[in-house]
Image (cartoon, rainbow over all chains, first blue to last red; front, side, top):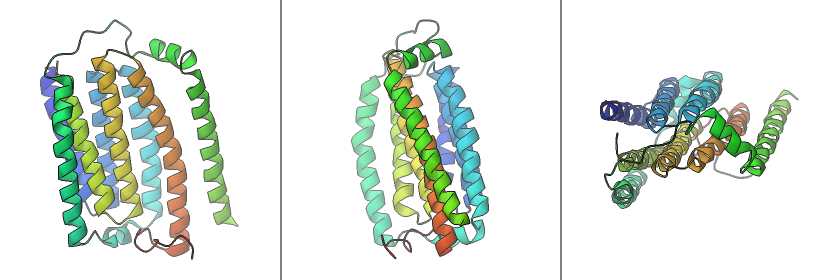
Length: 166
Length: 100
């Protein structure tokens, strides 16, 4: 069962990623990206990470993608499609480089799991309780640093928006 | 249960697709979306490693990656809108100069 879900979902993830990379219309691309993020959330569920899956859907597919769609609608999507692509040489170099990168990475990735099944986890693994306990004890400093980062990002975004109004 | 190697291989494929998107597309918005693809591929690898351990640290890392991605999206999209207001384009080839 888990295998069937994995392969179906992997198909969806690769297909939507291809649409994001190849399609001409930014609105279609943004919606494909939203679907892609949801499919990643399904992988998180398969990997015993329910809380990560929930915040993936709420934060990524919800908040960030809505922001993306807002901006896509704000900027003229029709003119966006004609923005053009890389030239032939650039395209060939990119595909060559990406192919070499993938050829180097794939054997390592497949060998890392080595086909064995991961050990079973204790109940509560990946749940809100264990997550919160880790965040507020061992990772308290990165947690606070992330809040400062979000605050500064918010101030920066407000500054950018305000300068436009002046 | 699926072996963790499959998840890592899929993460590698998705990351490579994001790289191709960043390198071949010329619209700043699409480049931004491709960056999100790469961030998600990295997140998938983190959560996969957390499952393989099993250790929660990988999931906590993925959480922080999401927080950074949210901050990055807010500022990055703000910059793209500011550039578009001023230049009427988001083509990165036309915004290649650091100073106008």
